[in-house]
Image (cartoon, rainbow, N blue to C red; front, side, top):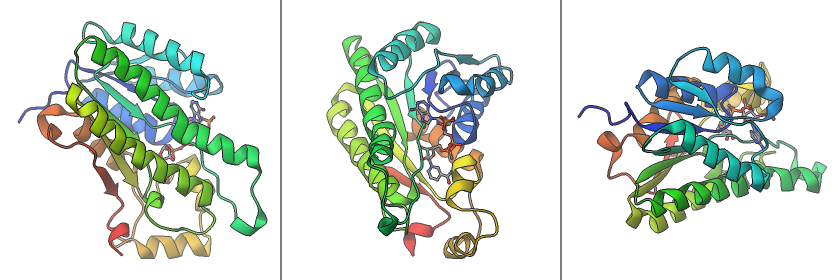
Length: 256
Ligand code: NDP
């Protein structure tokens, strides 16, 4: 089947670098119009990204934990998208929090982790879906979760719990929005060498080497290998019956 992505518009959060940037670039290569956002401090990255393709346009920048910003983002994103609005939403923005359980974790940091990784994508999906349902338009949301949502990786507590929660958000959206022809799925990447990936898994550290050896393919993932699965899950012509799936993109790590 040919792709349904050309001519559709997708909002990607956290697109100024890392996996989000790769997703935006991949979707544009597939012919989708990509509306991108990130925090204001990352305006430079967004500028670089929009320079890569005419199909990539910048939405307002801001903090996704701010509800006024979330409403503005969807409102302005829909305007930038064109006649059919934003058919796709990729909740990619996230923060890491990697501290040993017994060393204790700052409660404000734990709260921030849940706010950015769970509450923000849930609320953004809700605001976005309200508009889609009101205008009787279908759509697809993809949440960027993690392999750590399904297993216990030491020093990942708050982060893992936030990602387990986003898997459950993904399933709720799938069941409650399905009747409105809105699909919801997630990807669960293994380690990707982005800024976040390097913080959690420092180059050359023994635990980094050990993690790599636990992955049956014996390597970490490239950002474009996450992006291609996100594109598949957004594409109604290819994954039109996939709804509520949390898809590992982990080289087989979760089989072990
Ligand atoms: P990066 O930290 O490189 O990029 C994340 C982007 O999201 C940054 O630009 C960041 O901005 C932005 N962001 C963070 N908080 C907010 C906020 N409140 N509002 C708006 N934007 C925000 O991470 P990755 O590219 O590695 O990660 C992308 C996604 O993939 C995340 O959800 C992550 O949990 C997930 N993931 C990553 C893995 C990895 O190994 N890298 C593995 C599995 C999943 P800022 O500069 O403020 O941080």
